[in-house]
Amino acid sequence: MADRNARLGTIIRLIARKPGITMSQLHEELSDVNVNITERTLAKDIALLKAEYKLLPDKDRLRNGYVLRGMFTLSDQEALLTMDAIHAFGNRLNDPQAEKMLERLSDLIRENPEMMPPNMVPTRALRQHNIYKKSGQSRDLEQGLLNAIRMQKPVSIVYETPRIGHPEESEGYPLLMIFHERGWYCIIRDLKQKNYHPRRVDRIKSMKLLINGAANNSHAADVREAQFLISCGWGMTFPRNNEDLQRSEEEPEIAVRFHSTMAPYILEAVNRHPRGKVVRLKDGTGDVEFRIRLLNANEFVFWVRSFGAKAWITAPQALIDKERAELRRMQSRYKM
Image 1 (cartoon, rainbow, N blue to C red):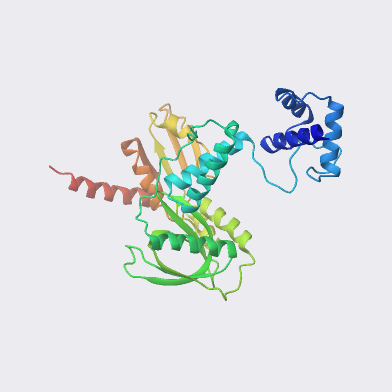
Image 2 (cartoon, rainbow, N blue to C red; image 1 turned 180 degrees about the vertical axis):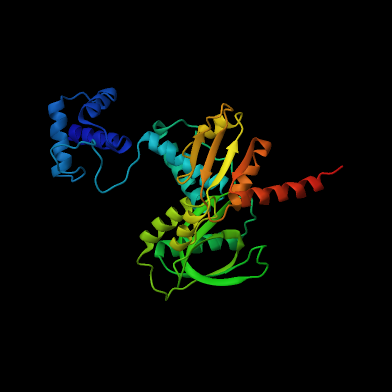
């Protein structure tokens, strides 16, 4: 009995470390740790884990291998990926919850050194970090937004941007947090109108949870709609609602030509935008063209300018004229 219990414990640990393991793979793994049994005995042990211990789904065939029931486990490779992700959020993005979880995972790994190398150096790294100043108040604000998202409750926020120049108050449902261009944004749906707004967290001066407000019963659908609208824009400039989306589809198509020296970089990512299209030009120059329709092209134009003289707008004419005027202003700034 003691031998069987020890063997069952080994089988459970192997399945926990390698969710999705098959019967034949499990038999090989057992042999590697000096547990030598026949496949018939292993089948009996599996049946026991199904029927009596209720640790495996009670099915004759498990096409996706064995996964422990009633608990969530990670394979060694999944644990490495999780450690890298938590390291990115904790160390690079200054997330206190991620830092605490990283400490707990590190303790677990130290107790089980066979899980991964002892130095625990991340294999994936995120160089970008939050450049906007954080304080104790901003950490409390982020935690409050996350709690509101989990509770699907509305909040009242006071928001201020350099463009507006004065605080504005609004109410809405926080849906999700997005890290974009070196800072966190919270996507919020208006409480009364179904408009979606990106609010940079460091610009939120105060927030109050409307605990007596109605829960957002359409939270999941709102998140999907917000993510779709974000994909229809460029960066954090996107249609605020379906009416804006329809207007963007009626806008003239923007065309940008990239010099042949930039063509390989553009062609590397022809799917860089779900609504954009990359085309090889057939005029013998080797240039490529990128076409897209946007309601607000400001962020997109900033991206085009980052290529210098290697990229230029060829349509529509109104946008070309606007860029020519900007170039004249730039030229006057650089006069010797």
